[in-house]
Length: 217
View 1 (tube, rainbow, N blue to C red):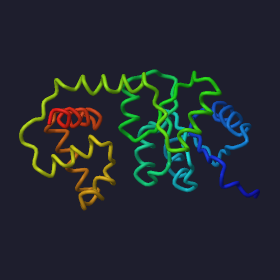
View 2 (view 1 turned 120 degrees about the horizontal axis):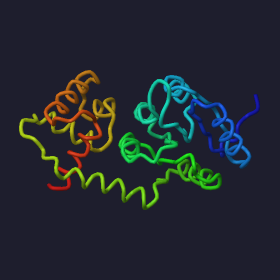
View 3 (view 1 turned 90 degrees about the vertical axis):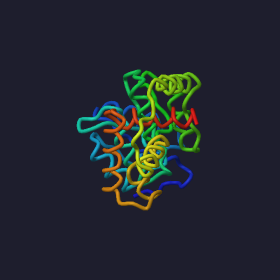
View 4 (view 1 turned 120 degrees about the vertical axis):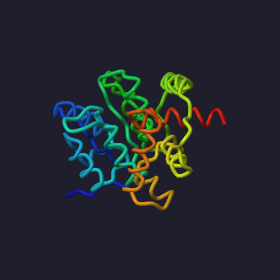
């Protein structure tokens, strides 16, 4: 097997459409400074493959047959925080956008993006730069501001409050466990309790509560 130049940007592609993966692979590899080191069509394949090759950048489809790119992002980032994750989607969905950012994604890319812009975004992500443009940032801030109607409820224990703060920072259960010196199972139980006490159904909504509480402090 031909050795890969260490200066090359190593990219992993995840999309359930072979033609999409082929097109993106050809686009990136014709640049001369990028190489696709792996591909996957499902969330399970993506997690296994990315954990195996640990690329510089993972380009993930937001919607996969067995999960979402955001779920893959959260799992990958918990194991390999050095991997920059870009979420690729056909849908201009604010909820998916916010979920991607909370999962630790470096960027959120619409499939209508111009080829030259996609190449630039991948390079910037590989260099450790955020690829969110000002419009995307504004929309995320608008979502956070919309959480101001959510009040921090009474009844959270000190440990649950710390877990909520970590959720607001976008940490995974594994990362929270490491921060708090707990087992993942214990953290999972705390998260379930926090969501129940907040009266919300997802980590993203809980994160909005945490961000609002932090901003009001």
